[in-house]
Length: 604
Image (tube, rainbow, N blue to C red; front, side):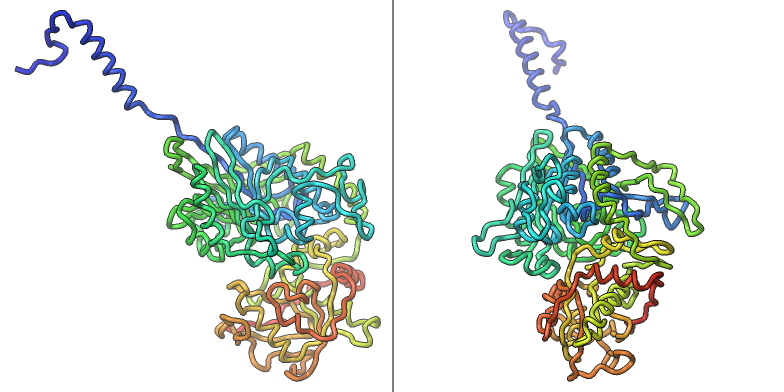
């Protein structure tokens, strides 16, 4: 008959030994099934497309609110407020948090940054604690040598009154130490040597685990950057680059792989942090869905959109909009024994500042109950205010008055009020008495060259205009035939333009119509969207064989934004700077009234 072990009689002479052995076996059993080390949570704080916006831009973000179906707008942005939010998010997981970027942290910046060759923004990002960032297309605005100087340090080289130590460069005791964070450029190669311009990957140890990062920019950088700035550089395919680097990171034993990429998409969400991601589209979708499964998170940029999306294979894709108004907070929960991510989550968090927004009636908007304004980080604010004080005489100079708002937001046809004003300013600057020998007849500007809106009903300052048009492009006039002008318009949609097209703003005396149901052009030269006979100059039909004088900015004139036909323009003549043309147009107008839309008509 079986008896329980507790009641089994001891074997003579061996009772103590067996009891000791049983105890040791029991302890061994406990050791073998005891839980292993707890999981480790690695946190990431993501940002993108800061563009040197050290001060609040006056913009807002919309947050969901159960009491307001359309959501609630909250004022957001400003480097000193952003720094405070970074500190708060780091405190949630102290010691195990990294701050990372997805490019365009500099470039197309307001005067407070650009006047000092972006050094103040680099110093602010150092103070905030940025660890790693991908390069974006705007990191190349001033060429490879300037990008490497910002990474490694040193004063801006003296040239044409610029690069004066203590005046516009090396503002901190005559020195500039460069970025303390590491720029990554995995798909940017020196065409001559075949080496990457900057490191392709980085590994950071967090919570006892190695996290691998791959950083890269859009392969379209050469078409959206002044050609001279990227001469001698090669920009490779994003997916092939990333997937080609994954094996080496896995071999290095990383517990997770994160991609920082300056390429993006958009959704139809009306409030931030809508994780249903309605209508997610854009280049980032195809990229994300073709990446190696080892990639856990993609922190994206470039499209100035905000989203937190999870792809079918579990990859999280984030973007924070632009200008430092939102940060992504991402948690990766990792099993240190298997070095596998067992759980992950992401949220976009607004950088709520103390700037008071007003409603349509001019009344202050109240913040929702669960939202509190951030206080300024003192150290970052000191850096910002020094730049503000030094640029104040220039930024505060009044150039004119505006009786209504000028927006970058495009109509269904693709034109914008601020784009129309810019085109009119280009034409005015190149068709006056100084150009009487060969005055321009039509002017165009690209939407990507316009970086901000202008609030209406009041004075307009030079600093505000600079925030709209910060690239200092020259104006270029050239001859095109009517047939070439038609080709220019078709190139607004033809490949390799983005799927939504790239509609130009034209001067008031030029009109045309396009048909959205017609072929956009899968290859250059095959577009059929411009309605035949719809091009009109001062009301008269444009003749295919006739020569017309047009003005564009120097970026477009060199084929930027994929307008290759402009390289064929004859009798080219360069004039002043685009910003000077815009400033002069405001001064001449006295009080400028926003022009009506309707220069471009869309059918279907």
